[in-house]
Image 1: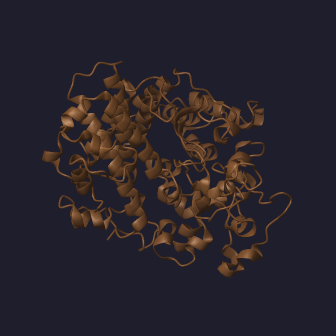
Image 2 (image 1 turned 135 degrees about the horizontal axis):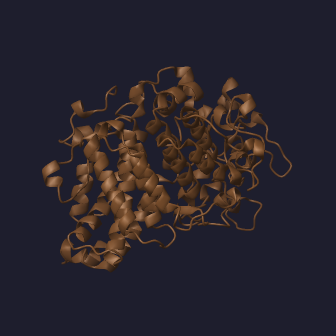
Image 3 (image 1 turned 90 degrees about the horizontal axis):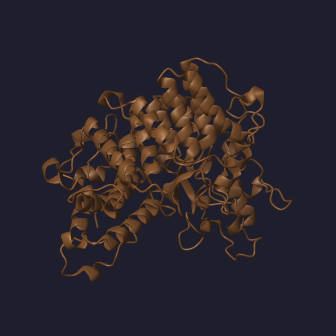
Length: 521
């Protein structure tokens, strides 16, 4: 099946199964109209559960989990992945090989539209009735709007103008790219409904009003200035709503411990396990030397698809971001590659011939390591491929830091500093030393320092590209701090966006070569 937007839409509207997993068996619906099917709240909720699974598996597992991490000043591709150049290396080189034919870019685009379209079907069905807050219909509508809004916010942030899947209007709008203003209005509208209608509490892995307000705040912060929709006052109001909903900071180590899932800090968390819903991330981003030396049964082994930049792992004194005593550093990053008293030898991968570029024993993201997969446990898994920790997509510390940014932009920098110190207090075990507290500073200094603080707090959690784009720092920081982009020297402002996949242009008559993002072929 071709995977362009129009084909996905046609298949789903005809009742054909797509790549979205977990939907109900279509055989049980024979003889029923779509209106009849979607009048059944039991069906809608079961379908919604499948859409959540598709969001999880299509965008945050296996290879797809690291794609948006790489190519930033925080995380870059491993040296072996860069050795032969070409398409894979282009994600950090930002050279001519990053173009409309790049398969990994196409894969990310195509992974999101089945989720968007499935959510749109629920939204159309539920919005056809009068919505009353607090009813089951309203809550399910809020959840579906959260999913479509979340996916569209990612698409709009990384591709710009996008096709909007509003099933009531698609006959008029077609499947072409809509204006930036229309795109971001659509995102904001969905997330407003998520905030207003989603339940205040929900099953783990499902959206709440808190998740809706958190993402709505991010949308107001990130909407391109030229749309007229960027509004730090409205964003701050959204984050203030979240701050009244009972979330709180917990020990940083608990956030990434499989024994403490869904903490009080978690706002929206993807639910994984070792079987059958593995996230497989460790396999992709662990150390290849560890894999060669100790096999897949070493829980921190992997294949170096991405590693941390020097800026992301070095101390302030060395030119990086880390201050002495910050507990997040060791919790988030693996520096020590010894294993049961043994240290691996790089000679085991000498065949790779990487010369001075060898980074397989340099710092790696640690947050997704899952000791349950280790060969020294009694679990019998013995393979890091089966890593299955939950992934918190939205958490309270992120909201606090976003709120602080808004306060700074609203000329309340002293209040913003106090909010940041709440997060930093946790980073020093809830006993922040006086010399580590942020004090009086100017608005511009705060803008610079908050981006470092967000990296320290959220490293490896897929927010860095979003942060750099919305603050206008993407090209400057990546060119300076990403080893491969700096070496290549070809990153350009047009790389702030990804190219529209050629397959979409060829097969969707509403998108022409003239609609391609500037700078790409």
